[in-house]
Image (cartoon, each protein chain N blue to C red):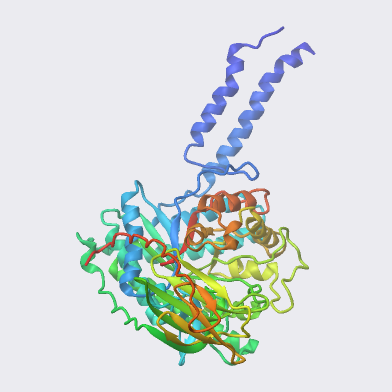
Amino acid sequence: MKTLNPRIRSAPLVLVVIAALLLQGQTYYFPLIFKNGPAPLYSTSYYIQNGDPAKMYDLGCQLGTRDAATPGAQDSLVILDFGKMWVLNGVYGVRTFSDPTNGYARQFLSLADLENRAQWYAQGYWNCSGNDKASHVTIGLGTNNYDSFNQTNITQDNLRGVAIDFGRNWAGMINRLHAWGVPTGYNSQILFTGAIDIEWGQDSDGVFRWNTPYVTRGWTDAFDGNDDNGSSIYFNYGACVGCPTGPTLSWTYNTALPWTQADVWYVSWGAEPALAVPEIYSNNGVLARQWAAVSKYGSLYLGSRIIFTGTMTQMQACQQRGGTECNTLDNTPAEGWGQLFDAVNVETFTAQPFLQYSTDIRWQFK
Amino acid sequence: MKNWSKKIPSVLIAAATLFLLAVMVKILSAPQPSPAAGPAWVENNIQALQATLAISTNPTEEAFIQGKLDLLKRIQATSAGTLQNVPEKPADACDFRPTELPTPQRTPGVEQFTPELYEDLQGKLNSRWQAEVNGQWVTVLAGTLYTEPPQAALWVFVENTADDGVLPAPQAAGMLQIISANQARLTLRDEVGTTFYFDVAGRAFVSSPDEIVPTLAPLPTHTSTAEICPP
């Protein structure tokens, strides 16, 4: 058997080493071979039941304390879900979730109140993160597209009009929080964003109370129109209810709530300020595959895949309240993150090398 | 033939060299990312978008992602100004905690209110009773549970315990409302005017105001977590 000259045998190896040295510092990703790496440290998001400023400060302080005690710089997304949008005596605000510390009564918080509460959360984080000046938190002021905004006139046009008012005002609130964070210096560790749990579906009594795409897109478009020349963003942290697991042009949720994958894509990514942190609750991974399908739909028919910013899970809420849905919808944060990462990286249409955040929602009390 | 086979390694090496040179030229000619001007979290988002941009082969998508990148860079630029005036942090975070709002007075007894959808409790509620029962604070809410079909029901919560639940009242029609209370015995009425009684301590619907049912043993109270800023 003829043997090659040792110099010739080692030449390819030398070339590879030289190339590797030249490529140092550059990371190139190729679809279909991504590995599901370790999930990021998850943050805790909250269903807000009591908007007392001191309690909001405490929540921010908890995260700040954790980040200060965790080696390295942390980067968290926290959604404060203040509940559904609500108009009370002409004032725009939210109806918080029922408060166990107050006989399960609900609070009305105006948008001015929300702005104030977000500031207190931020100050809690800032003060309690102490010497850690490198960690960051993105605070999403959250609501949802559920119910009729306390309106007696529930025609689609009226609801859309109210949703438009809310979207514009929500963006205005985020703009003001940005402006507040500059002179105070808080923006060096804190970013404020909007957030909305956009869903549809049937309540357990068979009634449809979530809003249509016509109404909901009123909110997203108005947010877009008042986002301070494109410097405020919002996260959709909803579920893709009943969606197919492949891109399907003919799919519509139903006639009462005619959501399509194109609508989902639009409110989650297509609208300029939209970014997506979808709910990935299901143990069998179907929710991740539904969202990957929306991304593929965007890639095939609308010009762009969705680049997801992170995932939301509800492990802690399930630990608090249990219930039958938690038998199948209690992914851990790492499971939810891993499912979406894997689902989008199955094929080139939806591949994304980096999935930044993992957040897990719980009730403020129980 | 022999000469040709001798040349194969050289040809392969030459091809590999050319390929690597082409890759290097592409890398070196690509614009290098400038250091982040603002906070790192936006930078991380930008990196996520840029990483996907690098593997995109669709010009429409590239333009779209570029739009998102521009959006994040605007945020980054706004935040960059903040880095000039970062204040010192306080030595004691509790000094800056706002004073808690006064806790609403908890008045034992019945309260009726305009029926309201409570999506977190999956029902529509119209009344509340609360009081201390065997040393524990208990809240009972009444209304309709959103099952299909909807059912009249009570929600019972014992403060700081795992003792809570929904108790449907299958005999009742429509919404159930708490009318009055005698100690921990509630008088309820449904939408067609039928009266029901509920014993809170026994967690049971009873047929008359004076029917005796066994009292349930109380569940242990949760130990409260340490307060961040103790009073």
